[in-house]
Length: 220
Image 1 (spheres, rainbow, N blue to C red):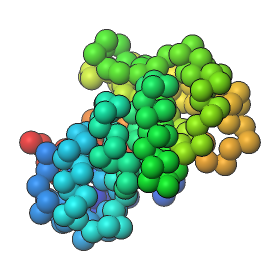
Image 2 (cartoon, one colour; image 1 turned 90 degrees about the vertical axis):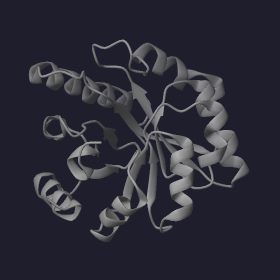
Image 3 (cartoon, one colour; image 1 turned 120 degrees about the vertical axis):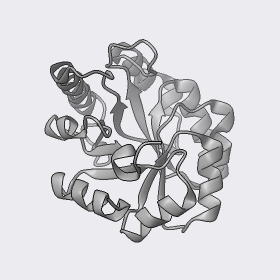
Image 4 (cartoon, rainbow, N blue to C red; image 1 turned 120 degrees about the horizontal axis):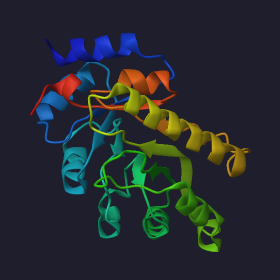
């Protein structure tokens, strides 16, 4: 099945309000171009160097999303062009994104990453840490970043009830933050949850953004 057909099939399944992020990590330029010519414009990468290299080689109307764990010392390489950073899990990282955005005379949109999965290996904040970040005077001084929502990953498991519960938890965290911190923000709208194996459940639980790789490009 072609990449174009796979993208078309996913779009038929999801609501028009849900953004499809095509996860293009490790995929060759030719495969990304095929998705691009099928109308896909939002691509997600895990690694800074790979994303920066692809940005140079591909059309400039692509929205690049950084979806992997981001180290502060690498923010400068993507700050000129990144559209959305999904994986903000500390005030320190947010301060560096703000600093590099300022240098590039931009405002960079960010998602706060929450840890809702049972695996300890995944990154992310809990609600206490998120509130500490948002209540801090340092956060209040950041003028070149904009928090537009949250991101999280469910456990890698066949247990769909557990996955659904974790996505439901993430949606509840979003609602709490919206009410407490972002009630006047028209920008705070995004819940990035759901990947190739679980995006259907994620959409049912309120996802506005799904990160799909292998279902579009095939397995590695």
